[in-house]
Length: 183
Image 1 (cartoon, rainbow, N blue to C red):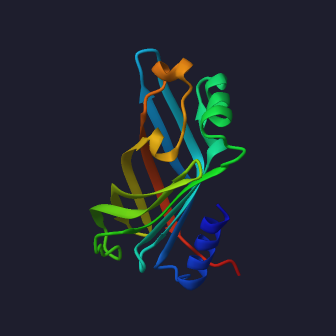
Image 2 (cartoon, rainbow, N blue to C red):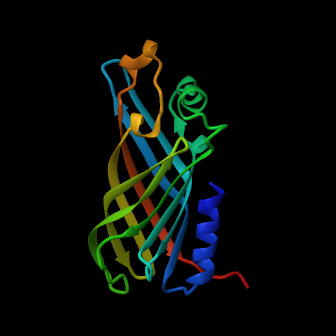
Image 3 (cartoon, helix red, strand yellow):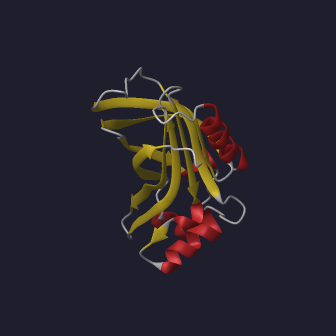
């Protein structure tokens, strides 16, 4: 996790121009899964993200304990038994936008980003799709994708296997502001 913080810091230092680096300290990430027993949903509004438009780089830092559930017991099981948030406190994505998008112009752009998704201490190369919307000085990103629990070695006890699906739907919504160096 320190690696991703260092990457964000270095990127901000190297590409610190206002027109190139955009940040968000309250990215919204949610996940859901439906089973015959109950629906599982959690939201996280404490994730941070950086978008470097010159390098087409996209970085996310996601604190696992910041996911909030409707039921406290579900949240406790998520942190202690499944994601082991004491051992793996953060998830991250560090990738690059594949399309050549001119974000100096307002518009809506369908994009993909390829990079490393780190969850539960297991890093996987992924290509994720989404939409970038540029309006004035603001850029927003929205996307949806699926995560297979087995891909990140997240084990589900046999006792509750019917209650937790093997695939989780993830939604991401971020509003970026231009990065400004503190004086």
